[in-house]
Length: 355
Image 1: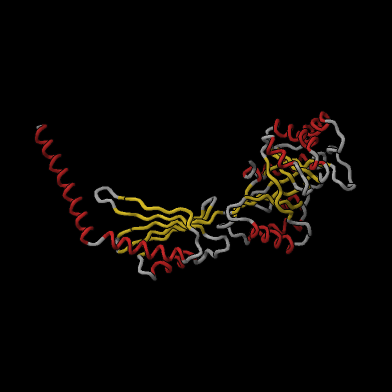
Image 2: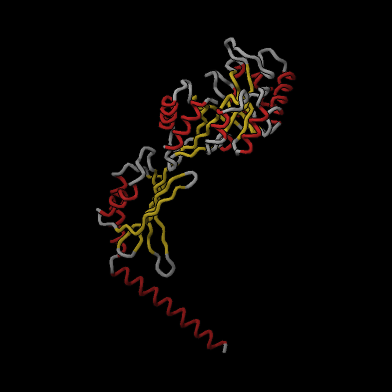
């Protein structure tokens, strides 16, 4: 019984080997390698003349009984490329050279937009090309919450169903209430801590970091300010064009932030700020403001500022953009979001960008 089973297995093995040899001979007689090289040359020519940089490429053998060659390329889609008709244009680009386009799939993934192409001839797939556009991630940080609980708060927290990080000034009349509302609406919350600017400033603050304060006093007020804003994930400076240029007071601030396991965002109210670089050296999770969107409180200005900022970013670059809690800014953001190319840009929370 065992002997007959062994013979059966042996015959099956020989049959499989015979099929494999037959396929190999068939491909060799059919000039498979030469035909593959011809297809590869056509694809290479089209790629080299296109606007899509090659990020990775290679060739590998696929298959069990017969190892066929498969060319693979990873290509970058430039950010300014129109995407609506891109799959059709790519198909035409290769088919005009006599290359068979077997399949074109698109996918809008979290971090990238992708076009996958399977090319070859007749029923054979010989090449797989992946075209990717790395999305630009932008975190919108909205400053100056806490002074009111009216239409502005409603516009940002209720009407904008997008990832938003709201920055609340501690000690303001509605700091606690706005923080609780923002938390319920799944917005991210940070403490907008006042710091002394170079110029004179108006208004009074319950907690503010001033020049000449002792380390212990700074640490105490930072802890109290954080406690005043429920659910805070981080802290950024309000004003601070003087304090953020001085390492001693900023070190005291950052030590508390690190101990509380929060992140820090340098609002960059001064080009001479040392806050971000110091935070990185101290191992504090941190980011910095790349752009103030609403220096002018006009909808068209804010929209233009946002889009010009996007264009200035390299593909795949992350960015924090700061604006302020006003109705004009809320309306501008609403219009920006309605026309946002979600295959190219992803709005995120600041916590997703800090390092």
